[in-house]
Length: 408
Image 1 (cartoon, rainbow, N blue to C red):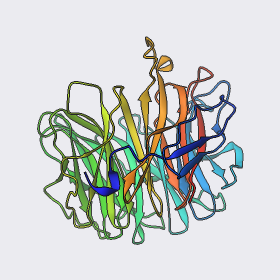
Image 2 (cartoon, rainbow, N blue to C red; image 1 turned 30 degrees about the vertical axis):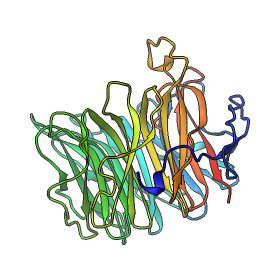
Image 3 (cartoon, rainbow, N blue to C red; image 1 turned 60 degrees about the horizontal axis):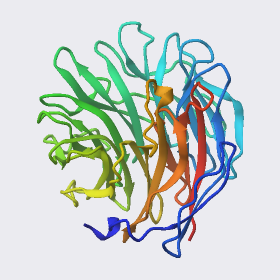
């Protein structure tokens, strides 16, 4: 096991603040270091609407958190600003896109002089397409007409976006009619121009290539995805340079362990890409694993590093990297293991751990006893982290967040 992800015996003291949802359970100290989890922040919660799947982005001054909402009937994309002190402005929500049909699964990244917000969109009433819009630091939605990033025949789903070397790269899973799904990308300029209107096929082959994630590593974009070419889901990756050239026509094998590996997330730290995923290589529930990719695409941890292996289901990891460590989050089946019949009956905790160059900290709770699937997301200013999620505490989805601060 590499030094940066040593066994979870060198944990961190966790100081947990109480919040409107009730006090968090504290963890026992195991080292002199501390992590502070701040009070809960309400991103979006309305009594009669579903406010789902928030995602944050740091622009150098504050965070833009975007999500999908049912407040006007079809699902639209809204946003709020979250200041470093936890103040939320545009409390009622900044309308980013009010399209004529449903808009789902937003993502957002700051680059140049704007945030690029992307989502999957059903405005054609034929198939899901990828659209976007730019939002300035001052809160101006720049594009009168949403940008058609990936449109036309065939479905496109689950977009993700990263910024590097003067361009955005937007990735998604695109339908191969009658034969499965590929991972497709296009570059978007800071002016909103779509630079690869035909798309760049990043991951293809037998079976399905799905649920991509993307990051800039300082030299190229690193795209990771669930790869089904071998019958079971593995984790694969490929690099795309700023000019749109695919550097790895034969995908990089991040993990091909026996069993199923799924739902990868990726972040970058000092030129390396840190990939995390959920992994069922034994007979138990999905655990949490990670690995690093060097800038040249070499997998530095080919066996994968076990990060959390408690005997409970792990799902939907997220990761962001600051100056000194990466923060990894996931949702974990609550220890009560109560019977569940609906999504709002699912009880899972939002858990986290901090990776440092020489070790990985002991997992701690960010949002315990939360109802539903959370689809946790995280962004950082380089030092602190804004973690956001959804839960169903009122019976309908609401968006919430907390700052996580590794004290130094």
